[in-house]
Image (cartoon, rainbow, N blue to C red; front, side, top):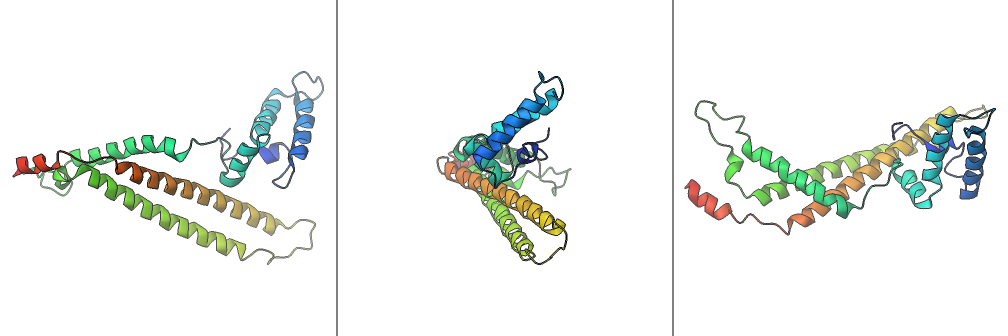
Amino acid sequence: MNTQTFNPYIVLRSDKSSSQEEIKAQYRSLASKYHPDNQETGDNAAFLEVRRAWDVLGDKIRRQHYDETGFTEMKPPVEERADDALIGLFNQIMIKILVPDPNSNPITGQPNPNAGSDFIELCRDQVIKDIRTVENQIEGVQAAIDKTLMFKNRIVSAADTNAFETMLDTKAEQLEHQQAANKDTLALFHCVLKKLEQYMDSGIGSEQEAMN
């Protein structure tokens, strides 16, 4: 099942306000009901889904991670992911250097203007550009969160449940998860930028001399 559509709280018929003991009781009840050995109500697929939900909510750290991000799987720390991100960045900039300038005359074959640039400086410029993009996204999502919360308790209902409030809570939660992902990406980019400080383009001087 797709991580984005799987909600362990719904599976265990509970919500974020439920205590660990309440969730544990729900898990035991549903696991017993859907266990394949149960001749009357056994359902292997439902049992596995209940187990999956308990794997997330039964662990306090994973539950907190899900509450904050909406993802059931734990991501490695930013520092561990930064090395892979750095490799991806190097590959991205290398392609930018190797690909001919799209604005050049195909007959004269003008070289890519980035070819003689400081490779690490190009990487740094790209990361700074990415950081600014994510910062703008964070600002935009925060504005959306603030506008959404302005409607809180604004629409009243005579019914037992307020569908508008439910929609509002869902929307706010989705935005909070999106914001958490944006902040995680921002932290990753800053970590990559920090790692770039350990690198330098030692061939830039000799390369420029060769071009002259």
